Structures are given as C-alpha cells and as structure tokens.
Length: 351
Image (cartoon, rainbow, N blue to C red; front, side):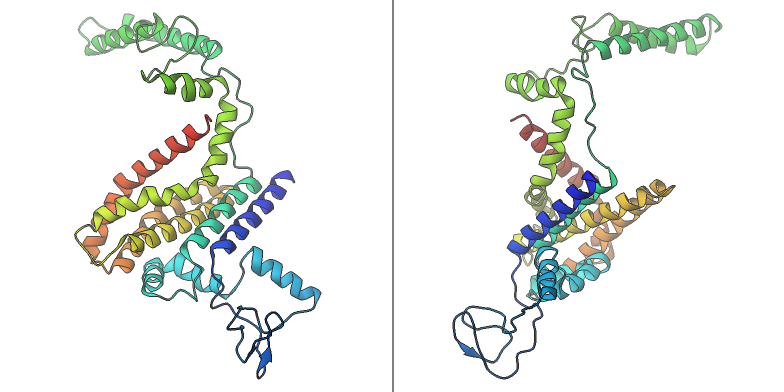
C-alpha cells in the first residue's frame, strides 16, 4: 500500500509540475451566452475567456466542478492530452513538425509532457515494486566478498588442474589451461590491478584523489544508500537528458540550416516523453505472468521504430537519411548520453 500511495503522490507531483509549465490557451471552456461581465476584473466581453485577465467566463459552483478541476489541473486530463497522446505514440514526426510550425494551443507542450510522463513512470515503478535494493550489506566490495571471490578462484584452479591431468601431452587445450591458470594465480596472489591482500575487495583506483576518496569510497561504504540516491536523482534530474541529447541531434543536421536548436529540443523532449510512456507499459506488462519476454520485445521493436518515424516525419527525411541517422542515435548518441547522465546523477549522490 505504501508503494501505491507513493506512486499516486508522484503522479500528482508530476501533474502539478507539468501544469506549471503548460499554457492554458486552447483549453475547452463552458459556453458563454451573450456578453458577460468578468467577475474578476469587471470587463464586459462575449468570449469564453476574459480578454483582460484570462478568467473563464463560465463560473462553476458545484462539488462536481471541484472534482473536474482536480482531474484537469493535477492530472491534466483535457482535450489537449487526448490530442497529443495518439500523435506522440503513432505519429511522433507529425506531432513534432506541427508543434514547431506553430500549432501550440491544441497540443500539450513538450516540457509539460516530459515532466508528467517522467513522474508517472517513476510512480508506476513504485506501484509495481520496481526499485533499488535496500538490503545490500555495507562494504559490499569488502572482505566478505573478497573471501568468497578467492574461494571461487581456487575452485576454478582445482577444476582446471584436474582437466589438465587427463589431457594428452600434445593437446592444444593444455596450453590454454596453462594460460588460464597463470592468470587465476596472479589474481589469487594479489597482483597489481587485481585483488588486494589487505581485504578491501576489488580496488578501483582512478588516480583522481577526490573521486577515489569521495564518490568511489561512498559507493563501497554504503551501496544501498547510493543506489537509492541514484534512483532519486534519476527522476529529479531527468531533465538533464534534454540538454545532453540536443548536441548529438544537432550534429546530424549541422549542414541543414533550416533546422534550429529549438527544433531539436522539441524533437528530443517529445521522444523522451514517449520513452517514459514505453517504460510505463513495459513495467505493467512485466508483472503479468510470462510478461517479461513481451515487455522486452515491445522495447526492442518500439524504440527504433518510433525514432525512425519521428526522424522521418519531423525533418521530412528520405528513408535512407532517416535510417542512417537512426543508426547514429542508437549506436552512439544514446549510449554516450545515458553514460554521461548516470555519471552525473551518480556523482550528485556523493554530495
């Protein structure tokens, strides 16, 4: 129940944040009959909204209206959402192009959509029990793990030695086993770069003092806390994925001057919003018996297909142009961006 409560709270938090950045223009209102006087600023007008202060001409005074305001203001369940979601899912290129071209009032803005979907994603993760482990022992890389690791090395050495005895002298496998035994014995003896006899486990030394004594030391001392911080910072700083991604998209269109940085920002933000929705669907499917395989299949099919359709539609590309840019995004940009993002949120967890 606590996971459900936390999840609902996270959805509401995301809805409020998305509402804060989303303009109200274009939202449906009650029908105003003839000229009315604005109850807020006393301006006489005949539209659905006051031209001076923007207040809705139709004033609700019922409990049902309060429920509507909660659903509309917090979860943003309005015509704009239902206009945006189908296009974001099935025609992302068209949505991106139309928003850039100026059709702003009928669609949820990229940033509002991103905030809502990211918070909704982490809320669903909490509801279905996806999270960081909290029971990892302190000094997970320390002496206990070191002892277990050494025992495993010794078992491998014994197994290989028995195999070597049964092999004929001329067998090429004997030379392979000799090399493997040499490496395993070096590890067991605590050679530089392997295991340290002092019992500190697997040592990671970058040579950078503040990194070794700060971030790495904290990860070794309390991995559960650091994993929790990594998850927490992951959604708090998820917006960093946008500025980290834009330069890679810009590089793919650097010689096409008609596309500006703003266009790439809209493309990236809507794309990340879809990815959040995809992870929501995958997490729900994965809790169904036998659903893990279907969730994985959904991921491997949807990600390249969606990026391809968005690239081709948003930038009016040919099939070939969209395909090579898709390959760049999948093979290089995404990996670099995600690595940089994890390094940043991991470093933030040390402070």
